[in-house]
Length: 123
Image (tube, rainbow, N blue to C red):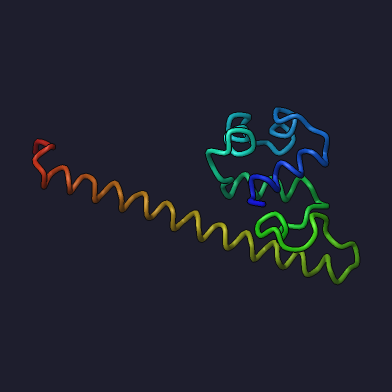
């Protein structure tokens, strides 16, 4: 089961349509459809962060890795661990988003250099 499947499980558990789910987490309807219905994309940081913040019962580790249970444990110690895990996961996602942005910039730079080198771009 991949992350798209796990998000669909959350939608099923909440008995929401895609549009209602998108409104509830504050993410664009088309973005949610591209992740959950068409499965063209994986969810980004904002999507996952909104999802975790909206559904307090949701275990972030399960969402991201598929390990454990969909629902958080309710005892105090588990909640503390979940909060720490959530902070760690958010930081991890921020780092990955930053790396992706850097790679996109580097790709654009290399593309421009290639176009200049291959004579496709006029100076």
